[in-house]
Length: 340
Image (cartoon, rainbow, N blue to C red; front, side):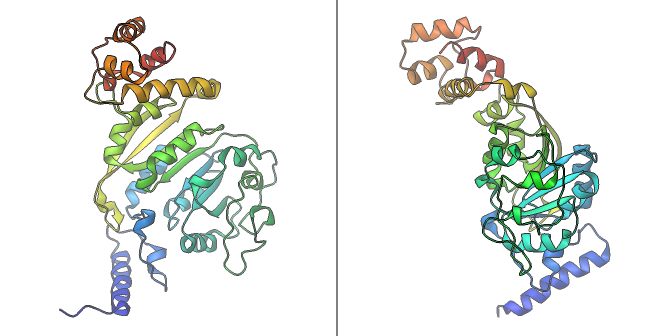
């Protein structure tokens, strides 16, 4: 069979999305894909675009937004979620790593003083520094402001500023560190993104995240099914699985289903010292070092202690030495961290 030319393939793809939109079916209009320059989603960036309006509405409803809310969105993509966030929240900082998408988002929201579009990698942002400089009240709209740029002063030629983190929230007029993270995040960097926001000096009050179904279930697991990921998130926050999302809600259709979770950060987190955090995660990693072994064996081996001494410490924490790490609660781990 003769392989279709690139030109014919692009025309067919455009037509497919135009017809889907005109039919008013389950599909959702995709400005990025309907543009004159059709661009194939990048697997390397985990690009799967949400096209189900019902799912979008449930995310917004779950976020319970008001005009007082400041929202950080990661991986804004085509701006489908961004547009709804701008309608319901007070301010939105949308961070998109893909330059082509960021350029289109900039054009789409230019002149709207409620939103900033930033072309940068969220994992390379100095988050505490960004949040620390948030004391002014004069919001600046669009992306034209010079204080947002690193090595450019304008985006008139289609250049999107790279993130200069110490100025973003200042330009948005934020006066405190209360903010929410709402995002359909790339699945291949789910854990690093969650860790970034939970461990930053100024964590969000809440995160509403679309993640892979299996990852969501691991995050909200109960004792008996706990993992390092579950402990790492639940140490800082209360978690809840809100609803599942079928893979057909995205284009391109991914290989797995998704789920939306709520991560509500406990205010106590800000009072915990770095040293306490280190001790906590040191004992957790030791406890999970070998899944099939008992807690007694793992801790004895990891800390190079005799079995009798290790057993005494575990019993002192009110824990059965023969149990396994996945059976412990967060409070169990906290007690253990104070004894080792």
